[in-house]
Structure formats: C-alpha cells, structure tokens
Image (cartoon, rainbow over all chains, first blue to last red; front, side, top):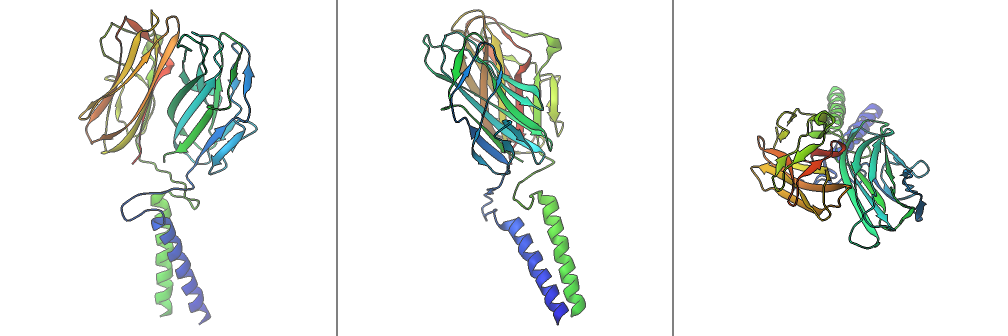
Amino acid sequence: MKKILILLLVFLFSFSTVYAIEFEDLTIKGTLSRPNQSGCSVIMSDNVVTTTNNLITIPFDTEEWDNQDEWNTSTYRFTAKTAGCYYVVLSTHWSILAINADYPSYIYKNGSIIHLLYWVSGGGSTTNQTFVTEALVYLDVDDYIEFKTQSEQNDDQLKAVGTYADIVKLW
Amino acid sequence: MKKFLILISIFFFCSLAYAIDVGDIDIQGNLSAEEMTYVSVQMDNGGIDQSFNQSVETKLILDEEIYDTLDEFNTSTYTFTAKNSGYYLVVSRVAFAVSADGDTIRTILVHDGGNNRRTYSSASSGRNNSVVSSSIKWILSGESIHLEASNNTNNALIRDGDGTGMEIARIF
C-alpha cells in the first residue's frame, strides 16, 4: 500500500509539472506569456558630467526590472545566463552644449564594439536631444553587454531622464 | 496493478523530460530555441566606404556575415531569403557621410512579396550620420528582403564597419 501511495505521488507530481510547463502560459489561442523571460530595463540615478572626447561606460545603476538577475549595477554589465537572441535598445539623452557636434553611442560585447551609432546634434540650437539605437545580439552563456557613449567636441552632460537601456531575450 | 503503476510513473517521467527538452523552457520559464533565424551582417567591402549617386536607391554591400544560423543570407547578393514563414524583427543601422548640411538621407527595407519600409533623416556635413530603422515583417517562406540607401540631395558615402549593419531574427 505504501509503495502504491509513493508511486501515486510520483505520478501526480510528474503530471502537474508537465502540465505547468506545457500549458500554464500558453492559452488556447496560442498567446504565449513568459513572465520570467531573461531581460532587464536599466536607468541612471543621476546626471553624468562628461569631458570632451572621453568615452564612458554608461553607469546604469538602477534596475526597473531584471528577471534573471543578469544586470550588475556596479559594473554596469548584462551577463547572459542562457544563450540566445537578445533585442537591445539604448537611449542617450544629452544636454547638447554645441550644435553640429558628435554624440556616438556604442554597444559592446565582451569588451569589443559590435554596434556603433553615429549621431550629430542639430536643429540650430542647444536643445536637449535623445539618440536611440537598437540591435539584435546573439549571446552565449557568460557573454556580456555594456553601453558606452561620449561627447566628442565638448564637455557636456548625459541626462538621467531619457537615458536608458532595455534588453529582452527573444528566444 | 503494481507493475501498471510503475509503468505509468515511468511514462510520465519520460513525458516530463521530453517536454523540457523540446520546449527549451527552463524551470524558471526562460525560453530558448535552437533552430531559429538569426542573421547579423555588416558592411566590410574591403575596408572601403560604399559610394552612392544622388537619388539612386542602391543596395547596401552587406558582405560580412557574423551570424547566419539557418544559412539564409547571401553575401554576394546581400539578400535574405526566408526558409520558414513567420514574423521577423529586422533592425538596421546605416552610417552616412554627406557633403552638405541638410541632405535628405534614407534607408529602404525592400521586401520582395510585401511592403517596403522607408526611414528618412537629415544629415550634417562633415559628420557621420546614422539612420536607424526597425520593422516587424510577416515573411513567407521563399520571400526575400534586402536593404537599400540613398541621398536625395547629393552623392554620398556609406561608412563600412561597425556603423553599418543589419540583424534579422524570427520572433515566432
């Protein structure tokens, strides 16, 4: 009798786990929810004053969400726990102290540039401007992403509001 | 009865293992997949910028393949041809160098079988100017996409290297 009960428990556990994995987040219409999918959204807590032509790693020290605990708020890196294709968005918001000046943004993977966004301040005035870039990046386990930017011709200020990075693992 | 229960238990353990394996959804609900499209290409062109004549929409020389999981991108024709029907996220960054302020620059994602996507911007002379675009496209098996660019105001150059590239990923 005891063995039968044990086997019955094993059976119920197995079935419930399979059910949870297969059906819990997949509706009858095929809409898939993945509330624990890898990814994060990070921002800066303060403005950053930059000096001319000094490339900085953007200090994203605040997480809005980080589903798999992959963003490090001290090193400002996203380190993948699982391999796959990641969608990455970077927005930088500059004070713009000079027009027709360069404000490039970079996405680094494992310490090397993989994507570069050129952007030039325009509009005939020194109004704040936001520069947005995006990329699809393949990461293996332990690969890491960093975000860098600089003001090439002037001392300037990277604004906390409007500067953010979003990462989500597509698959 | 006892043997029956043992067999039933073994069966469900096997089901559990199968479900985890084929779905690649780990116990925390983090989805991975292995046989999905991911293409990452950029302009090498022998280390030379690509030149454009005014107002001529020209196919970009995306001849350096960094990823192409299902062998769907042709680095001679600079064209992606889908092997599977589905929704694809297409992201591109194109770096222009122009000769005059205010040049109208644009990129065109050309979809053989669907609608094109055009992204416009205005450039500053003496600087590199990026045009970033993205689109989610429904692409049928056998249909193709490629990326073009033009400067409506003057001749132009497109920068080679990390500033000019395109990625394509099938979402589902």
